[in-house]
Amino acid sequence: DIQMTQSPSSLSASVGDRVSITCRASQGVFNYLAWYQQKPGKVPKLLIYGASTLQSGVPSRFSGSRSGTDFTLTISSLQPEDVATYYCQKYNSAPITFGQGTRLEIK
Amino acid sequence: EVQLVESGGGLVQPGRTLRLSCAASGFTFDDYAMHWVRQAPGKGPEWVSGISWDSGTLGYADSVKGRFTISRDNAKRHLYLDMNSLRAEDTAFYYCAKATPLVYLGWLSPIDHWGQGTLVTVSS
Image (tube, chains in turn orange, purple):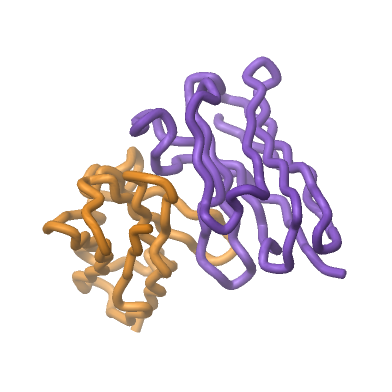
């Protein structure tokens, strides 16, 4: 099975900072990679699919990119409401797999 | 508005069976693949199973393969998960989830809507 390794596991940054979270696939997943945001007590929210396509309604400060088997979620200017845990998900083949998550906090 | 309402969770002994149901509304159910995802308290989400719009293709996580069965009834707008030989490690909130419009190979997709979840606790 393809493994998804997310880094860092936690991150603390200041409001207005540019923040990046990385997800590395153990094998190629093409562009079949999504990113989710999960706030405490809530279900995950889809942010990005197809590695770089922004889901409708998601603020444009969120973006996704791919370089080979490395995928990056970037928040261009961190806002207080972005405090959450972020997960990547690969969906090119069964089993669909989530990364282990990155907890993002405000300094 | 998309609504997904799960039911059927509860406390069950190891080795027993349980059937989860999901009632869908607010979208054309038989146009979309569907998934079950679970999340143990304090842990990340774990995809469990997915099924195409016509039940023609489906898939399972290795951890549940051979024990769980996903199915759907498009006429009733319901998704199901039959869970057999339950184990303590199956304890989690189980979420019914709707696939995005773009799917790969009939059912492989991200998830754009989630239900509120139903808690399954496996314990003696």
